[in-house]
Image (cartoon, rainbow, N blue to C red; front, top):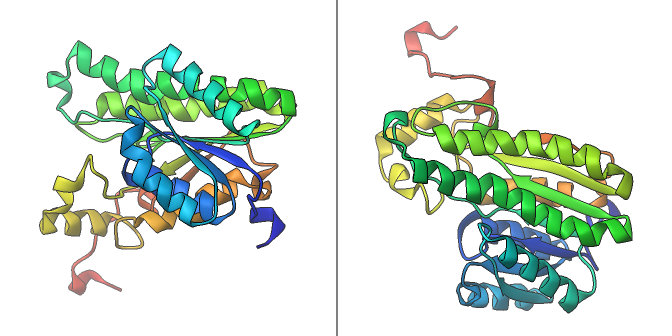
Length: 264
């Protein structure tokens, strides 16, 4: 493997790896050579995936993590460092959503979403960075979304949390750049996950969505592999404070298919 993309000897924490995109991020990093720290609110939900990572020839450990609990975050970071003796990469992926019209969003809805997606990402990053600062090296990748840059009805608190991630990485990049730590936002577009899978069961909705995406299809999880490896590796050593959209181009605007008789 090209040294610019080789993660051999690196240790990566990926939060939210009991299912979904978190597992794809962890698998991609493992295939690039990294050893893994896998997390979930209940570590037992990661154990079968832990075995999969080990089958790649990588080391892996599963740890409990509730990103809404400061104490849980500190315990996870301390245990990960104690196990490996180093922390090199963080992919802050754990997140949640409650999809509602803005008039129906409750106080508790708002707090659950922001506490998980935004506050949790900050304090997990802080806990990892405390160890990275001493070694003058780190790669922090905070997972955002196309909602980091675009607004959508029914996603007000979620979009606020993801827009906050975009702002957060710029501030942390400036804070920690002098310590050899880069901080970036990886922002997927429309990918099928456990949170939104019911929408993808409607073929009319998928067709509508695809017509808005310049490459004419929703994202497939492997579309994110090269992006997360790039941001985790030496290839991105001079890239920090940035938002990398992997969205098939939907953020360029609301693209619609034209009727055939209007095509040039």
